[in-house]
Length: 459
Image (cartoon, rainbow, N blue to C red; front, side, top):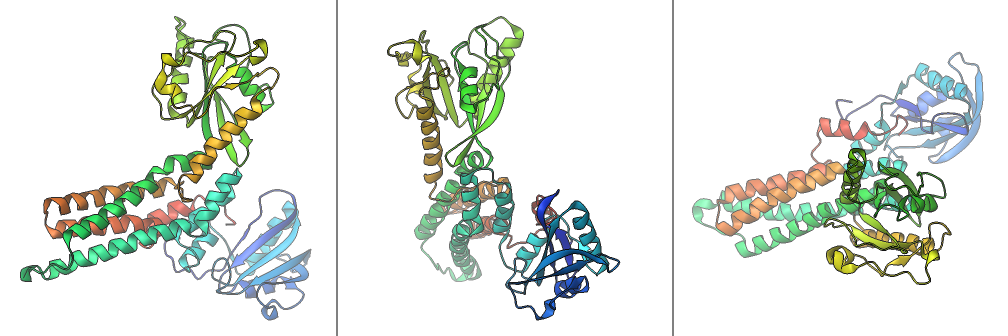
């Protein structure tokens, strides 16, 4: 769609493709009720009150009965799109779905584009762009935590925070613009120290939101957890035990794992992406060396590291500096009366990041795995709750916040150094534009096309 003013009546199947108990066709537009009525036998849809359902029959494009159906009418402006909407629930046969859409197109509708229903909701003011993007995130959410974050955004919590920041920036910009208008009279409308303090507060909040992106992305896509440790410590056995499946090859031969093996697990409200890695040791084997290098790179991108120690033969911890949380798992605890702790003096900076004492486990018997899972869930919960209930999960939002931080930083530097008010005002206006682009208050056809192309046809 090249414009936001679209008059066509659109239709699409809004339920997942394939066979199911029911399928729902959605029709939206100023002629939605009229189009649906042309293929409907039953109570007149024009007489049906909004948000009411009626049982009847839908007809194919030849006028023959196609299926028994339930029609639900949602009248403008109280519908999802803000337009008149009719939803037809039919049996979930592929043939019935295809024939129903063909019949609706024959009656005057056209097939909706990807995300067009949600785009119309945005265009009619039913939601801003950040909320519209949250709809796609809700559909794609694979954990309770990811769903919770998307729901928070769709309900407008993130948008409210951005609008508050933008409104304060508008006030700041207005004062600067007034000073420019009366520059020849040497009038000062606000104390520069107050303006500087306000700009600094705004930058702090923008930076906090941008900094939440890494945690938000991890929760949305699955928190990356690297299982690291020396060879034969039981890393692959631990992965298999956590997954309840023989996902990784287990062997007493050193260097069996040559590449990173990944899989996902759900613990409490969170999805974790577990990465089993090659054992850390000195080796002359070229292939194993590549695997060890990949292990270290996995540790670098992980948010949590489970460092596995062989309780029967503990070795010094060997990890580069990292900002990931460290969980130390003392494996094979079933083989020793009391598992000794690894030598912390070998790398105190790493051990210092462990949130709790080492956890004795046995990948073989399953002992201690519940404690390890609880520790993983606790770290994930801490990351989520530590962000004041607003987490940035969208790459586009992160880039806009980063750009806003850069422009407000220049404005602050200008205020501090006595730079021309015109240049300061320009950077302030630019910051407002970056924040407004997240909400969609400054429409861009390129941004809108990119955002809504992520949606399915029926949404």
